[in-house]
Amino acid sequence: MDSIKVVGGRELKGVIPISGAKNAALPLMIASLLTEDTLTLSNVPRLRDVAQLTQILMNHGVDYSVNGKRSGQDDLDGQTVHLTAREIVDTTAPYELVSKMRASFWVIGPLVARMHEARVSLPGGCAIGTRPVDFFIEGLEKLGADIDIDAGYVVVKAPGGLVGDRVEFPKVSVGATHTIMMAATLAKGETEIVNAACEPEVADLAACLTAMGAKIEGAGTPVIRIQGVDRLHGAHHAVVPDRIETGTYAMAVAMTGGEVLLRGTRANLLDTALDTLREAGTEITEVPEGLKVYRNGNGIQPVDVTTEPFPGFPTDLQAQFMALMTMAGGQSRITETIFENRFMHVQELARLGAQIHIDGNTAIVDGVSTLRGAPVMATDLRASVSLVIAGLAAEGETTVNRVYHLDRGFERLEDKLTRCGAQIERISG
Ligand code: UD1
Image (tube, rainbow, N blue to C red; front, side, top):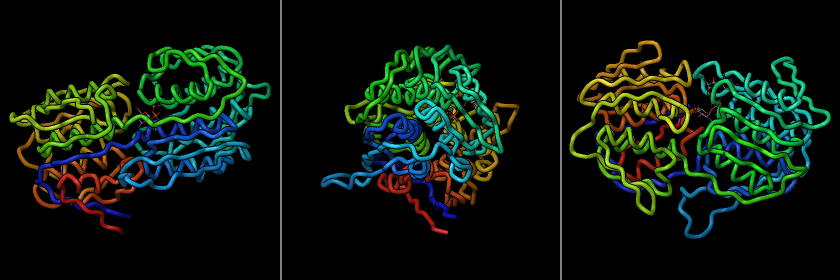
């Protein structure tokens, strides 16, 4: 398995193009199952999860094509893909495909909405907690589906089609919101989703579904109302910029110093995280091309954070922020409320010299003046990148082993960082 070698201690200077959001691209691609027409998506990132989902969609009968590179295009510009589900040939999403990525489970919504049946393997994904699917099941049952669990598969049937109803989630879930929203677009009558996720990726999916002919109000707020329609049609939609990639590189600059333009992103996708970074001593200004990030002269200040659903501080930036706090001038407390097992990076950061103690779902971080490079192991997607950015700031050489997860969610990380002066290389293994 590949590893990444980083020689730390260099400031980052230059421009980093921000890719389209993985967490938006995946549900948008799944939305193609809802129509027999072509859905064209631009600004799609080149990621392993995108390739993996393509396999799953093709298995259902989706035709997939991707535009070639155009003259004048940067290698790091997003790709344009065309997805056509003219005929759904198979309503089963098999274990071999779904077990690699949790989001592939979300095909269950469009499949049952359009085909009135689906058989989808229980999901896999990052090992950051139990991540059950009870909200999906209860939500689809509310819309009139019959559900059985059979040999590791969720089997859904709605012979007469789904029927709109009120679906209230006990806890905010991004995936369940995407799935029920997609399912409701083709249900009879009105569906009201209460305690819906407000993440920008939900609003992005709703914008695309609306362009496809869906009737949706309130996406991006806790109550979403969907008026079912008989059919959806094709559309063209550009994927929203990746707020997690944006925050990750901003934190890298906060750690190493220097000045970087994060091109093609927007502050309003991650205001809370940017405010937290400002408190920690990072200067961030919005410019027409994106966000300019540099460290002010006061060093890294300790700041306490608690992860929360949007618009709170995202759990997907928790590991990266912890990496930053390991070098703060004092103690910070980082509390994880979304996933119960998301501190696996702690022991790896400790190998670089970080001082972190865990107390329940809070990590207490005592900043140190220097980290020292060491071999470390990537555990999940966001944890992996936290080790890379810690390595960029550490003295000497850090090797991040098992970077498989990084390729799931960060497009050409080494290239983007190398362009800004980092000494980083991939070692194939
Ligand atoms: C999505 C993101 C992931 C992010 C997470 C939280 C994608 C592809 N992934 O994951 O990067 O970390 O949101 O912002 O967009 N839960 C249940 N029952 C369910 C569903 C969820 O108990 O049926 C719980 C989960 O265990 C977790 C919480 O709800 O504790 C939130 O999870 P959820 O928002 O569903 O995460 P994902 O959609 O899988």
